[in-house]
Length: 306
Image (cartoon, rainbow, N blue to C red; front, side, top):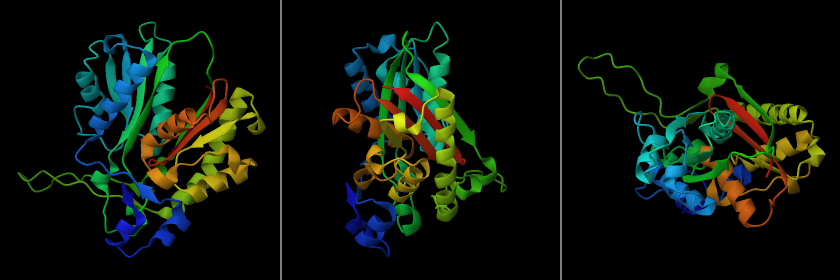
């Protein structure tokens, strides 16, 4: 765990500056564990909770913007380590919307009679691509992983969804960027650290996330007042407050855990969901909104009856 005070020793910042602007007090940083290592831990816990064997898993989707490598996919590594020999496995790259995108893909593939048991995991080791001297980005991000086990059911749990991509704004949040080599035979290039236009991303999130949520709610024919909990990507506490205001809903419906995790990108929503379930905040039958937003720029919403 890395505190704001520790970051103040690396750059020109302090605890009050970080907390008032982001709502973050601490974040967790991997100590040698890569993205697949965190995902495998989550997968094993999901299998135990669902009482599934690895051989019974048909599909593994890992949402990540910090994979172990270009290839193999992080999901393939997870499949191999689990010995889930029958599972198809692939990654989804949609940054902080990745978990919602992956869950939406899983739902669509459930129409395939061969797909019955799915693991959807968001896993990130963002510390690999953080510049720890850049206070505009370094104070924001943390490492973590979370996920869900999804089984085919005769009951409808996904009630509405909306996905959107704004590629014309793709340069507003960039990380891990590569360049094509031009000096043969020296072709290997490094990866860039986070670069973000914070003002533009804030504007995007506070406008497009409410739009996405309202579109998904309209598809489900559900009013915002009927939603028990809005589980939003934990990017910035001020963004979530503004989204709540635009939807006309009380902040009590918007649980936060950004204070001790920071922004964990694709891991954010499953981490929050797990925490809310364990604390009894989200119960069986609860109507919840899952909403992600981030690099791409992307936004995604799912309306779920838990």
